[in-house]
Length: 155
Length: 104
Image (tube, each protein chain N blue to C red):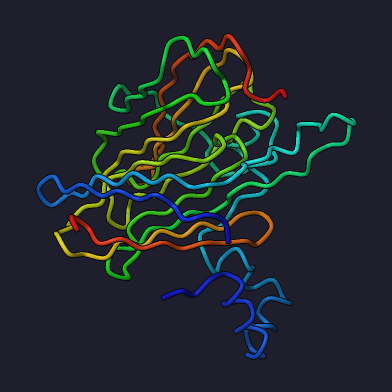
């Protein structure tokens, strides 16, 4: 069960067919496991990150609840709870809009977890925090503002 | 390898309330050391959780997660004695897995 990406790739090295598949681009390494979407993580705005994730639009929804402090004293550690009440929620993605790289990550719950996640994030300055939920091929979002008195990205 | 994770799973009915604390610097690559040199980015990219060997939760994350990350999530269909294994992998290829027994 301890099959890692490295292990998978190493295994692929011995299997010529897979190497050919990689070479032709038919099977990118990212497809082996859930992709770490470099384009989205490198994006400098939420809009660009969403574009890199192929999310054209997300409907505002009151069924996603972001629990976060209104005012965070320490931007280096801001606790955030996200709960989705949307049936069939597959994943929850989080963005801190004014961070240098807004995309924080995606949490995939479809395999066997409830549509809830708790994380602690860095927030560089007072910013909107946006949660985007994927459910049944559609996207939903909600936004909450968090004010920060000391930023989380300095020294 | 990093230090061991602290994992706690509390059963509420058939849902395991999982909290995990990982020891990791989560360096953003934006900070500079006192001599003005940029400290290279070093952060966890992937997290996976398996219940009795079956994937139940995974995440792809960025350097915006706080140092020594804490995550909580809720695994469905869990019972006492189940094995919960959590794995992280960072941007340098370093990784670590820890396993606990639910309710044990």
